[in-house]
Image (cartoon, rainbow, N blue to C red):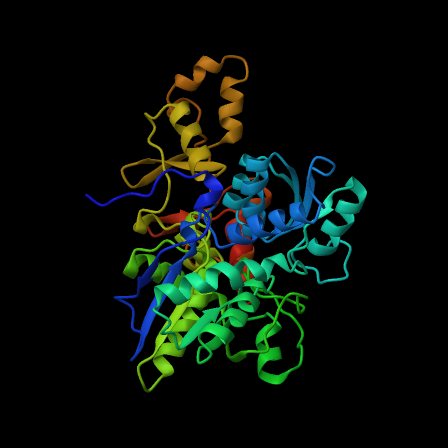
Length: 458
């Protein structure tokens, strides 16, 4: 039997994460290794800097009995790292986060006891709603200690003194390239400084989401105009003070679609559940490996766990709504429908199901109405208002069958109906039931139509 290490406290589990070799993805002539930072107790590499920055503030006398309140701006994972450490040490934590963060991250933060302030993700630095500027303002208003990961020297120090030496030891000091992303810049700065001393031949490679300004800076020395991107936790619209890209010799700009598809491929091919930024890093690492003409040993990071993105990039419907999954174009209403009956994607009821069953499915699938089918024929619709009207005076009626309360006033439309005509039905409160002859194709709701129109912007 393998000897297991003795018990430690939770914070003692941060770091010393395992390394695995990619075995099923095409890495060209190279060997590609993944350091599994998703194995940290909080699920990401940011546990390291959460502990480092709080410990440094305590040593400097900035935190302690006189100051028990921390404030930070975060794209999610630094907040989780700080929340983990703060909960163990008894600190109050307020986090300002942009509104593109996954619901799983927000719920995780709140479950750890953090106070979450949501702000806009579509504004740049200098705007009063920009998350970093807002966090600094909140810290002053509440009298808290502003952690400021973007300018905190304890951020890169965590990687220079721990992450870097771990990678070097695991790779037997034989490492030709290290692929990193930049959010606050601490990982790249700390690792590049360590490898410059320990493995000077190691090439530092930047993986950047398309829309971030950092890849342009590496390639041209100039900062371009920032765009937008879906990937969470990396990419910037400014140069963070702790960032050090002086040793970066190559940079890749990775589109969102490639990042998300690569993260999904990492799970499918290698069995590793990584987050969206892990997809960006892996996509860049694979590009680098496949470009080489001689064998090299390359390392990158699985920055965080994909369990925080199950409702987003691992959800086929979300991917399709965002335009990241290719779909066959039909030139009719099939292009508008999100969930197709022929693909068994439509959530349905039978007339004999109870209203409690209907309620459970409405909640589980986060929809407002459900079609009622007998065989393959739509015989009714039931929505939240039907359930309310049935149960408002007698909740026991939720045990009665759907057939007694469903609406049989149905609005069917032919699959070739012009999109604009759907507004006529939606404005009257009908959910268009799309038919191809006698065949039920699917439903179209307001959000389906909005998603269809937004996809045309890409």
